[in-house]
Image (tube, rainbow, N blue to C red; front, side, top):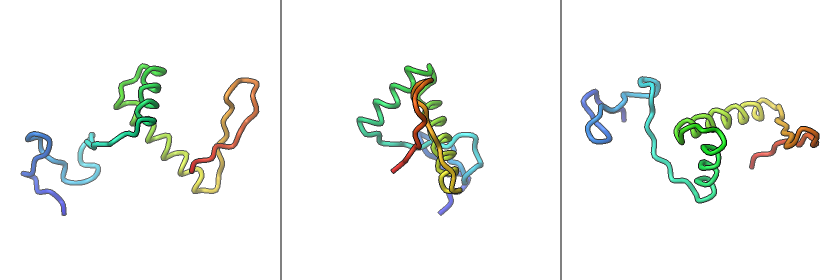
Length: 90
């Protein structure tokens, strides 16, 4: 059920009335140990914040899923001279 305009979340800040009504959408996630290490590694490699890294990861994941659902394929090449390998997501 949609929240009324007077509803608050997170210590009194106004709640968004629906998707797309706010530039930010606050969520809470529980990361596995592996995902937490991956997030730390992404932050280390890019210098981005955890929030920016998660946002970029979700955008990339959505793009890859769209390509795959449209019947396409995604290939990776781990080194400049290495072979291309088809990316498979389970």
